[in-house]
Image (cartoon, rainbow, N blue to C red):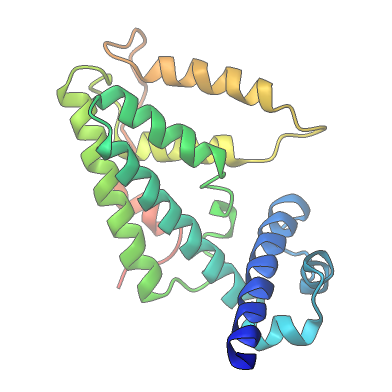
Amino acid sequence: MATRGRQAEAARNDLRLLQAAHEVFTTQGFDAPVSAIAKQAGVGMGSLYRRYRTKEELLQRLCLIAMERVIEAAEAGLAEGDPWAGLELYVRTCVGFRSGALAPVAGTIEVTDEMWRTSRKATELADRLISRAREAGVLRPDVTTLDVSLLMEQFSRPAPGPERPEAKQRLLAIALDGLRAPGVTELPGDPPSLEWYEGRWGERP
């Protein structure tokens, strides 16, 4: 019983650390000291370093969790029978947990093999979701998966001043309408390439 109790406490501490790290990094910047994370989580520095030896390890874990949540959102979207409802659920879910909040660390941390594998799975599922909506004629034909991913990144950035959730929801509704077929304004330039999108994080293995 004592062992299970210690394991449960360790799991709770890890969850508090991850939640605090996400909050500190995305509000105070990625140069914020890890001591601020430990303080917000209510744990000692020893507990933090026993779980994550470096700030990079902590950021890698946060990125992996974010990608796993994107996969869950895409799977939920694909489970929706209506192609547009599925796409909208995916976008709203990802914006809701700020899936792209960690994008600014691209190129500053090493991307592990597990991160690459998870990223590819997330992209494959999103491709299926986007293709289904395009084939159903509800998504404008010139919008790509990476366009949608970059749009969600924009909505993941913290707004200056006090948080206004209703303002974000208004803008998200406007953006979603902009994705609907047939589209009025021709999109400028070439769509973003996968090489550029992933290249921000480093060379793929």
